[in-house]
Image (tube, rainbow, N blue to C red; front, side, top):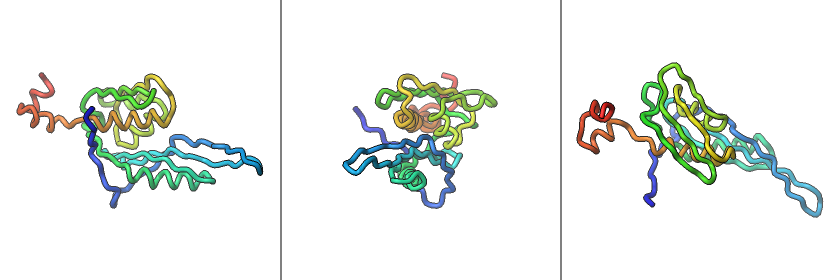
Length: 172
C-alpha cells in the first residue's frame, strides 16, 4: 500500500483557532486509591485551508488542552478549499470509523456530525455534506476526516498530471 504524503504545513506565524472535540476522564486505581487524569482531543485551524489535530494528556483538564493544542500545531495539513467547499467526493477509513465527504452548493452549510464538524469548520470549509459511517469514536472520526481531507487533490494539479485543460477536468 502506498504511503500518503499530505501537504504538511509549519505552524510558524499562522493565527490558529482551537476547538476542543472531546475530553476524557481516565481513572487508575492504585493501592492508595483512585488517580484521575484527563485526555483532550483538540483541533486547530486558521479557517483558510490549514487544519491540525492533537491529543493531550495531563492530571488537569486545562493542562491536557494546552498539550493537545501544542500537539495539533505539529500535525498541520493544507486542505484544498474551492469557493468554500471541497473539490471532489472523498471516502476514508480509520479503525472502525468510515467518513464520506461531498462538495455542496453555496449556502448549504456544514452538514456533519460533531467531531467532523469541528475539523471541517477549522479548515475553513463552509459548504459540505459529510457522513460518519461506522464508529462514532471521536478519535477515529477525526483521524478518518483528516485522512479524507489529506487525500483531496487540487483540480489544477489533476489537469497538469493528465495533461488536459481545467475545463476538461470538470466537464469530462
